[in-house]
Length: 247
View 1: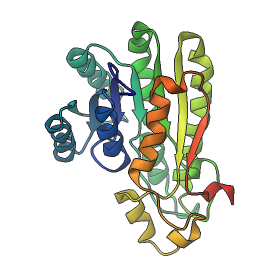
View 2: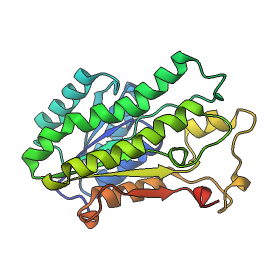
View 3: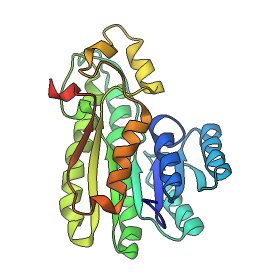
View 4: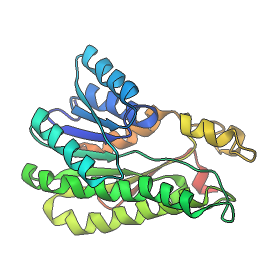
C-alpha cells in the first residue's frame, strides 16, 4: 500500500475528484479526513470507505474560514494522531467574461479557490512539522496555465494557486514539507457539467485525446504526489488534461 500509516485531509472531498481521491487514498492505506460543506454527501463517502475496510472521518469545513480549518485539523489529529497529507481540492467555478464578472463574483471565487488553499496550507504546517514532514497537493487547473474567453475569476484564482504552491514549496522544503500543484483539464464532474451547459463550453472533441477525463485519472496523479514515491518532487506541476495545454 502506497500510503500505509499516513493521515490525509482532503477538502472538497464529498464528491467529484475529492471523493475519488478519498476512496483511492483509503484503498492505499491512508486514514482520511473528508472536509466539505456537503454534509450528506461527505458522510456517505466516509461510510463507503468504512464499509470497504478503510478509515475515514467527515468534518464540515468552510475553506474560507480560518477557524473552520483549525477545527478540522484538530479533529483529524484527535481521531488519527497526526497529519501527513493535505489535498486542497475544494473549488468553485463561475462562468463569466471579464466585463460580466462582478466584484462579488470575483471575491467569491478568489475566497474559495485561492484563499481556501492558502488557509488550508497554513493550517497544517505545525502538525506536519511535528510529523517530520508532509505533502501538500494543491488542485489548480489547466485554467491556471492558459487563458480562455470566459471563466475570468476562475483563471485568476487557479493561477494564484499555481504560484502560491511554488512559494510555499520553497519556504518549507528545508522542513521536508513538499508542496505541489495538479492541473486537471476537463474532468467528468458536476463542475464540468455546469460549465459545458453554457454556450461555448469545451467539448470532448476539443481535447487532443478526444474525451473528458475521469476523476480517478486525476486521483492517481494526486496519489503519486502524496506518496513517498515523489520524495524528490516539490514546487512542481502535474498536468492531467488530455493534452489540452499542449495546444
